[in-house]
Structures are given as C-alpha cells and as structure tokens.
Image (cartoon, rainbow, N blue to C red; front, side, top):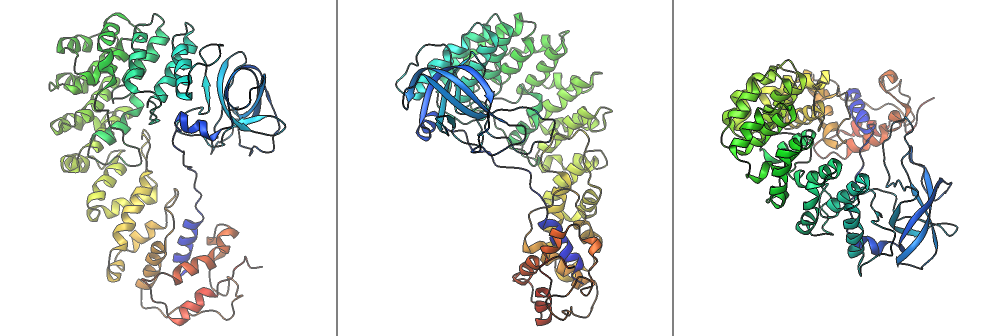
Amino acid sequence: MWRGALILCLLVVSTPVHAYPVGPAIPLEELATKVELIAKGTVLSVKPVTDPSFVPVTAYPVYEAELAVISTFKGKPATKLRFRHYTYKPANVGIGYSPLAYDLVPGRTYVVFAIRGSNGSFRQFQKDHTQKASQGVIPAGDTKPHRGATITEVAWEELRTLAKDPVAELAREGIDELDALSGGHMTKLADFDRGVTLAELRPLVLAKDDQIARAAITVFGTDGPYFVDRDAPYWLAGIGKGTISGLTPRKPTTLPGAVIATKELLDVATTRPALRAIAIRALGRTKTVPASSLIAWSKDPDLEVRRAAVLVSAESTDRTLIRQAAVDPLPELRATAALAIGFTQDPRLLAVLGPLHRDPKGPVRAAAAMSLLSFAITDATPSLVANLGTDFGPLFVNALATHDPKPYLARLADVIVKNQQPGDWWGGSIPSGVSWKLLFGYLKAQPIAELTKQASLLDALEKLKNEAPKPTPRICTLSILRTRSYSKRKPFLPPKGKGSSLRSLKLEPSRLRTPSSIETISSVCMVLRNTKSLRFSPAEDSGCMAWPSRMPE
C-alpha cells in the first residue's frame, strides 16, 4: 500500500545535484586583506608539481610558476617567488566543478595575490573561483616597479598601461580587465569608476588594429540587449513581464555606456567594414542613430549590418524594418526580427510574430518563442494557446499553467511523462521539471476526495526523468494520500519484528534502483511520521518503523 509513496520518496532522495554556487567577485582592497603577499614579478618558468594541500580536481592539475620579483606591495620582499596554483588542462572528460585557476605565461609579468604554502612556496588565495575570472592575478603593463599607494591604484596603472600596448592580444587583455574591475562582465565590482574607465577606453574605439578596436567597442556595447545574440533570452527575461524561467534576468543600465563614445562609434559604423555591425549594435540604446542611417544599413550588402539595423530599430517607434525582416527569405533576418519584437515589448507586433512560430528553421522558432514568452501573460495568452502544438509547446503550457494550471493538467502530465524539450531551446529551467512543480502544486492543494479522480496525474508525478525537486514531507504526504484514496482498503499492518525482510513487507526489490535507496527507507519513514498533516494509526506508525535499516541478505 505504501509502495508507490516510498519509492517516489526514495527516487527523490537519491537525486544527485550537479550545480554549485559561485561566490561574488571580491573588491581589490578586500582581497588585499585576505592574502599575505602581493608582488609584481616576471614568470621565469611554469611546471607541474605535486602538492597534497591542493584538493585534486579533474582537468585542473597543480602547477608552480617561478617569478623573478620586481617589487612587493605587501609581505616580505624576496628576489624570487614560487607560486602554486590550479591551471586548466583539458582531459576529455566531463567536468562538474571548476576551481579558481590561472594560466601564467613565461616571460609575462603579473601582480600576484598569494598566501603561504608549503616548503617556502606561496599559493593561490582560495580554491573556489568567483564571478571575476582569474581573481588574484592581475596582468601587468610593464616590467617596472609597481606604482600607487593603494592596491587599487596599482592595478589601475598596470591595466591602463597594458590596454595601450601595441600588441593586440595584450591590449585586449588590459581592456577586458579594466571592464571587469569597473563592473563589466556582471562582476558588480566598482574598483574603478565606470565613467572614468569608459573615458580611458574611448580613444581605443578608433584603434587602427581591428582586434583592439573590437575589444573596446565590446565594452561599450555589452550593457544593452542588442550586442550579443546568445544573451538575448537573459535580456528578454529582464526587459519583459513574461515567463522565461531559470535564467538570471538582465536589465539595461539607466545610461548606456555608448553615449560617451557616440562620435567614435558612428565613425566606425560608417568607415570600418569589419566593425560596422558591432558598432551599430553598440549604438542601439543611445537613440542617436538617424532614421536615414538605419534605412541605409537595412539595405547594406553585409548581412550582419542588416541584422544590426533591424535589432537597433527596436528603439524606434517605426516598426517597418522589423515587419520587413519578419518575411525576409533569409532565416537569419527572420530570427532577428523575432528578437527585435521581444525587445520592443509592443503587443501589436505579436501578430507579426505569429507565423514565425511555425517557421521551417529551428533557430527562427526559438527566437519567436523566447520573444513571445517575454510578453505579459495578458498579452501573450492567445498566441501561447494557438501554438501549444509546436515544438515549443512545453514551454508555452508551463507559462499558461503558471497563472492557471487547471485547464492544462493533462498537458503538464504529458510533458513530464514524455520529458518534452525543444531541440533549439536556449536553456534555463528544464521544462519537465517546471511542469512537475506546477502539477504537484496544484494537486497538493486539492481535497482528498478530488485525488481519487486524478490517478493518471499522480502517476505522472512518479515519472519525472530529469532531476527531481528536493524532497520534502509534502511529496511523501501526497503519495500517501494517493494510496489511501484509491479504495477503502484494510489499514496497513506492520510485519512482526523490526528485522523483517523486504519479501515479508511485500515490496518488490526490482523496483528499487540501488542498495543505497533501500537503506534510505527508515529515514523516509521518519519523515512520514513527522508529517503533521497525516494522522497515523498505531499500526501504521509501528509498521513504518519496522522497515529494515540495512540491505537484507
């Protein structure tokens, strides 16, 4: 009688968890208090080393870099520094966790933050990485002693020098670091004032080297939704009022950074063939692009320039370019039009979006789906209902059921049982998992009498093929209610003796997946006993406690 309940609880309890939390980026001045040494030095050599104090991590061996110390900001001065750290070395195996790691290059100079290690060596300040890539090592701009009274000043001087290096690879690294330490890359850092940093980088938009110019333009463009296509669902989740689940919403900054470099970006957009498209995208939120320029760009021979023009036109009240692109022969332009519709949040364009849900190209349908899901449910409902039969139907039914699950219970169960998921889906919360939570939430609120009519829905809850939600007494309670609701059966009677075997309990061992699952039975019973919403008879109570605590012989 309890078999379904216990098995379901066990499957939930046994579910592994693969995600791990990533800590916030640490401001420079705070980081300086966590370490024992801050030194600037040039790497002489890098080699693998065995250090038992480092926890082994797949694909991340421990290396030791020997540096010739140029100057020391904190700690005891020395001529050489042996710095041990994780480094990434692909091993053609699955990786579930990535530690803080560095790739130090012989001949390059760095400012290193370290704590004492073994045998006179130093080591990285912590194992876990943060939101700031390679936190704890700053690439230096020259081989001179550091300059600055604070570590923030030291880092600023090193990086602004590096950003002006004539070697593109080095300049790009300096630009990227300046961006991150002033709040770019979603680090939320404010070591450097954002406005001052952008002013420092502004001249580099016109750098003669395309790689350097591209890096600088990227800093000015990534604070808005038009710059990187793969980030579109995050921006739509933040801009819209819809249901794009499982993604961290992004919202544009109040003042786009590109306003500081409008003149330079317009120059690039008209004179630099390789950079025109990204310059147009960066200009998007500045509202300084003339309508005549947009029209001209929409007819440009370069497809990427045309796509940029369509995206940026979302800032205009004139929707002509979007409407035209939605029926263009090229799927790239149709997909761009779909994204632009979401960025406008103009419900009048949902009719234009309609045919794109059944487009022959998957990426077009994906763009249309994420756009539709970004709209408020009051605006999106007719389109969501009309497209439940498309490949993105599982996401659409979840959006509808989030607001009113009752009309969609059978569809939710179908998503769970069949583990439905679109082929061109952009990621986020697994559709079948969302459906499971919605269905469970609905059923647990129903009276017991109603559950007698919902056997197929209760069955669906036991068939989730992805990772199940974290176990709670509620899921066990719901399953127990299910077994009590099928018919008026005799109450569960305990077997004789606490050491009874699974056979005497009439439980089928073949339905239990692992010995560890069986060993969990007694702890699950404890959960059931402590569920206040259930009243167990003395027989049921002692019967639960009669489960064996170990795998029987």
